[in-house]
Image (cartoon, rainbow, N blue to C red; front, side, top):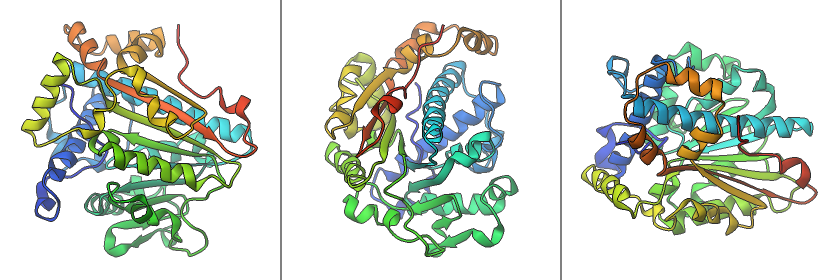
Length: 360
């Protein structure tokens, strides 16, 4: 079964301090980072920053099956394309972007961007997760030269909130429980950074929200309130607010019920999946908030139509896959949804080009 990747880690160390079920949800991030490490080992992906963020002993784990590696690859490629396009579109207007990764866990995207030619296109990169998770990541950053060196000068990197947060000129790691009312949870974005100069999140820059298997673990009311908070935050600007969601959906068929039962056995529930019985329903998540454009594609569709033939041929040579039907069935229950909302004088024609493009 394709693992329920959430970007928000940790093993059971903090179980007694959290509500029942949180430890199981956080454990799915260990699944995610180990799956990514497996895909890197097998040559599907290139990511020199994944190893410092592995759970203890993670580098000794056996590689995942081809089905997992391919699913991880498709997810990563699609989201990377959307993020890169977003940065390029903002740059074409002479602007830097902000990226806010919610439930970020062990994600490595900041470091991959910071070590690439697009580094200068980032004004802020913010990661938010449980305090237990951010403290673990802050510790990993301090221990790793590869991670720490891309944050800037040592004197400009500040550990805050008793080790649960980190501020640097561009990268910010912040603790918050996303299930709380946004007026409380999102205070971390409206407070000053360690330098005291500006609030962490500017209301005037193009801003992209990234939710990788996060909202599906929240109630629909909680996720609606969270997205609405961001929608309201930019209302007085000429900015553009974008969002990318990766999650499972359509779990009321036979395959979905098996998936749900397997998750329940791990003490994991998916209340956020209930409003989305099919791929056509996924764009309504953003349409409810008045987004200008909202689209969704299943990972099955993305693999078939949005990854180039040369690249598909390359990954097909990496491992023998004799479970094509099972792969397609799994990928059909995961999707990526993206959308954006324009404010003020933002250029609709310019931003309407953002999205996955079909490849030949």
